[in-house]
Image (cartoon, rainbow, N blue to C red; front, side):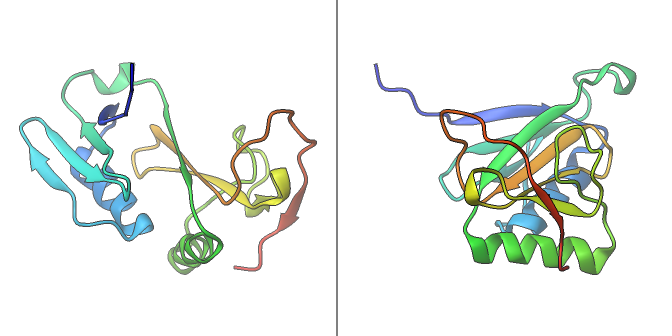
Length: 141
């Protein structure tokens, strides 16, 4: 059976703000309100439906979205974060602020949406079969 991801629902504190934040970082089309959701569509046509009224704010578990991007796209994301003074980290534990990682001979970073409930990752190289030791360097942005 062929399987293709069509959409995913992400719970957050402010659906419009979180969707606009992600769309801006990705240079994606403007988010669209659809019923109780605000949707961002990725370049491979997967809908990310942000919802802020299905789960009480104090019960939201952090979601994680990871995007594989080109080196120029990564540079653009990093530049936007730097220009806005937004925090980012080299690791999912968010212990290495202002750094990027070079896992799998690529580059990666993590950040949070404006409500702090969606962890967003941008990587330039897909994860390999065998984890490599994490290395980090300060970013140039």
